[in-house]
Amino acid sequence: MSSIFEEVPTGKEAVLTSSYTELSKVIPEMLLFDIDGVITEPVTGEVELEAVNEIVEILERGKPVAFNTGRGLNWVLRDILPHFEARVSNRSVISKLCVVYQKGAFRIAFDEKGKQEKSVTAPGIALIPNSLREEVIQLIAAKYSETMFPGEEKEAMLSPQFKPGADFAQYKVDQERLVHDLQTMLQRYGLNDQFRVDPTRIATDVEDKHLGKALGSRQVLTWLKEQCLHPEYFITFGDSKSDVGMAEEIYRNGIPVELVFVGGKEQLQGMHLPFLVSFTQAFCEKGTVEYLKSRSRERRC
Ligand SMILES: [Mg+2]
Image (cartoon, rainbow, N blue to C red; front, side, top):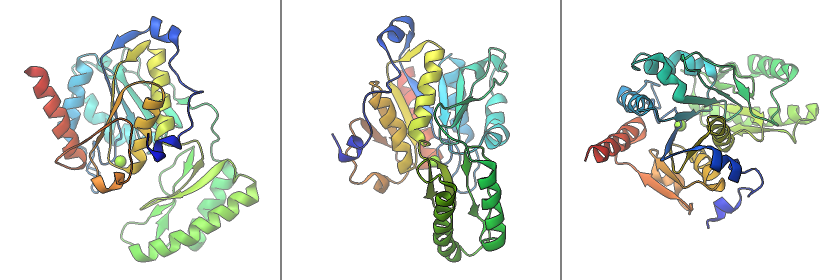
């Protein structure tokens, strides 16, 4: 087993229990997708309609599908979901979809009429206190407004972002200073044990330490349990190293899993993962289409 995998805590929180397995309906497989760079073009954010068509076809066959994104719900509802809603034969088809957002903090599903249900918060996580949020917004305005803006509104995360058009090299210098400022602020609030500062390429996330793609997978497993569905096999799709956690968590819960990695291969260098990793010829959203189309061809043969 790989060193990376061994770092993942084992055992205790496994969602599947013997009674669950007995009661639930066994389904052959479950597809779980990151969204950015997997269903959308990573730079323009444009939705890949061929990927949407393939996923809609799966939903139309009554098979469940889930999304696991770090983005907020407003973005999913505004920029992503309408493409699916426009293509389903009947709104009830959407009831097979689970959307996990803000790195596993929340999930939504849809009733039999396709109406959005109340969001469910992951147990045991802390949301961003209002006072901290206000102070960070003020800090960005006072000190970092040349290269950053406060970012998408999210209850579980603060994500000050790179300001489009700003000098990227200057942004990276500012980001280092911001990380230091945020860590100092968390300490002052006595929150440094609960929250972390996670600098990414174009944003600096402040979030509960439990948030991540693995938590997102746990949310999906809980949703499946509520639906009394027991997949025998998971196929997870990601384009970033952080997406590996999505497959690891499924594996840790004892379900065979495959990671379809549509990002640059070099990101997984040195990782010896204990499950199948499939790479595609094409990258990102085009890689997703390539994989899904080859599967539908196989099914027709
Ligand atoms: Mg992505």
